Length: 415
Image (cartoon, rainbow, N blue to C red):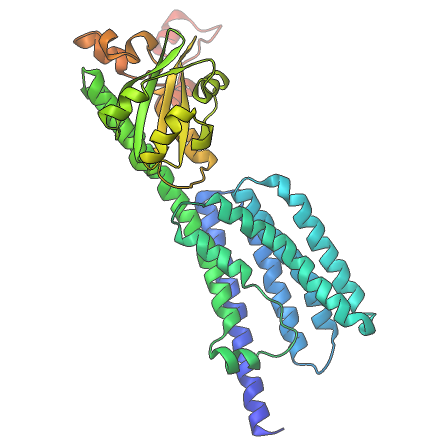
């Protein structure tokens, strides 16, 4: 064997071993992440990652044979299954499970095309083109859903994951062209950044949840420490603006079939006067209050007399959060956003939780003029905490002494 060829095969083997080793290390790391966070979408991701590692091993074995080989054919069959599982994990993450069916169909069809290509070598060019398009189709669906989910939000993990998914490829030939053209092992870089991107997404979600809990705690602390309506409302609106990146926020209370602004932050006086009252029956905010769902309201859907003002203020859309008490609707919290942005279900649940702090006593909470002075106002503004069962009280229930039917009074007393 020529020394040059021997050296090229040695470099190729080392790159393949390094890539497979990196895949196995990332799989073990993802298993530890799943053990800590228990996110359901990590299950199909780890399954897809394991299948992806197996496909890489099969394709690597086929690279050392001249012409078509059984290992290469098996790798091409397994590879779409791995891509389908990775895409399914992304769709579970963005909560777009209705898109799982087209992804599954695309992966299954790609596997059938790869299997048909082995006994039909004469049709290999046509089947190969169809195969390359079909297995990427499901992947494109997942990437598009991921980009829409993070629209308007800066997240290094999500954008890294989206780009690396688009760079997934299936090479039938040796890896010399990677070294010659790119001067770096492209497969290794893509696989590393793919695993790192998903890990960063998990950690970013955990950090966002902690920040939302801290925001709710700060709102509760201000409610418990203040006797006045204005500081509580200003603190609540400020925390919501900071958490969602809004330019302005205001609270509309329902009074005489009108939704009136009683407190705001980020609006000037003239804008507040013009936007003060809207009809509860005909407005989109009133509809969101009746339906009890967090609603994204586009500026185009606002009445014409208010649309021009909101555009002048730089708003792209409004996020309307209904505030509903035990027996009756109270009003709506409105967040004004300056750019296009998507909202996850966790963010909507956070907005609902923040709004629920206003629902303890509707008559005193919604209107600052109705708030009682002194201790009564503080009680009216304080949210009702849920009952807490401590582990100690639950555990002591198992050790309560039970009466013995045939015991004497002296024995029962000793027990």
